[in-house]
Length: 237
Image 1 (tube, one colour):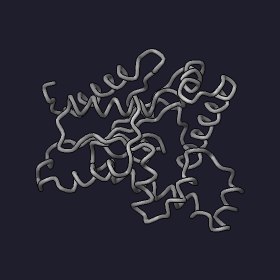
Image 2: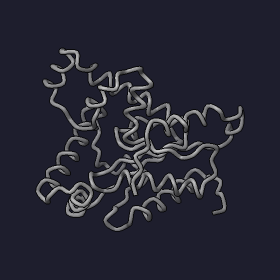
Image 3: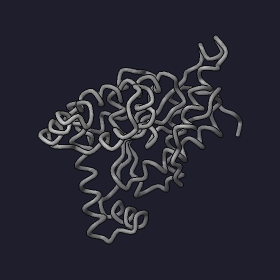
Image 4: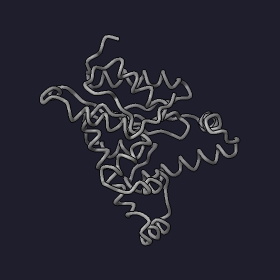
């Protein structure tokens, strides 16, 4: 299961939040969830299934919305940046020399500026609540918000490579190289910009091994933990 939710749907969520009657949600917890993931552990699919699970089980004024690939679009929209900058906003590590040269040539603002702008957007979305934020250090950006629940998805290298092969059509060697490059890039990204180890289990409320559970079962487990943790009202489904 995978949903590539676009900016239009994301903006619909934000407009819903802005239309909420004054005082309607003042005394209700509006939680957010961050999902950190190893490559091939099902981050995108689990996030989509989790949104559906919470829609069915937890009462909310606005629909649960996943900010994943569309997060970059939201950052660009928030800060009135050109769409071409999306290509420079991956979670992968980039050598400092290459980054500085691109900035000097005017290809993009400094990486620090882009990281700050991304963090501002993530913070605002988390404060709105009913969002699932995938990657980009969202758990560290929102670490001081008591209304955010942090999840890490892990899995064996063998099974994660097999999933990437199935999803992308790569052969075993290419899939292995892709997984290692993506994992390495995210680890560097978190260490360079936040000074943390992405694999530190103490950064998360819940760490789930998706080798042992289906994506739907993983989503159900997280959903139940979120409902219990924040004492959310159930819909009765």
